[in-house]
Amino acid sequence: MPHDQYPDSLIRSVLEDVKTVAVIGASANPVRPSYFVQKYMIDKGYTVYPVNPGQAGKTILDRPCFASLSEVPDPIDMVDIFRASDAVPGIVDEALRLTPLPGVIWMQLGVVHEEAAARAEAAGLRVIMNRCPKIEYGRLSGEIGWTGVNSRTISSKRPVLRSGFQHRGLRR
Image 1 (spheres, rainbow, N blue to C red):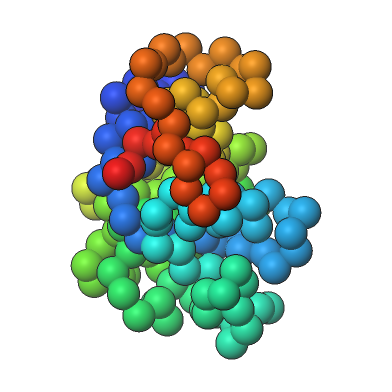
Image 2 (cartoon, rainbow, N blue to C red; image 1 turned 30 degrees about the horizontal axis):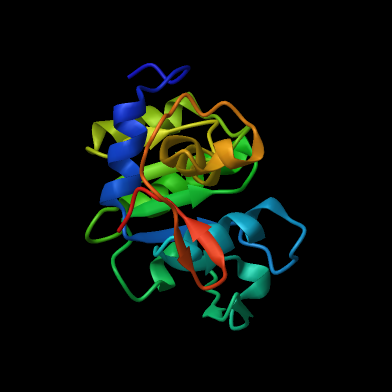
């Protein structure tokens, strides 16, 4: 699959199908993008497992942090990679050793590795590169439009107030 553009239907199906996300390169620092992406995804109802060997045994956003994917105790639907592109092959190899296999490898903004993507796709995984699930979720749900950003999504669906924030998400 070409990885320079993705149809909205693919991104939407991934974000709707996924329930559990392992965030590789998770940070406990609240100003880091991996921290606020984790928080956003938790707020949207995903089960998030932070993975960072330097934080293993600690908690991030009240969730235990693991040293590696293989230590996560539950099946993982999506591996979200917040690491440099040269770290991707090893992460994909580790993901391909999991049973059951995750359904998605998601590489964050600026993270691209065509060879690792081809290996993951050959094993039946969906791969998204150089995208952020937080941004894509907000864009597809129309929530990002609340700040004046053109989301290319028009909806008459009313937002719901949940735990102090408005929500008009893809997930129920």
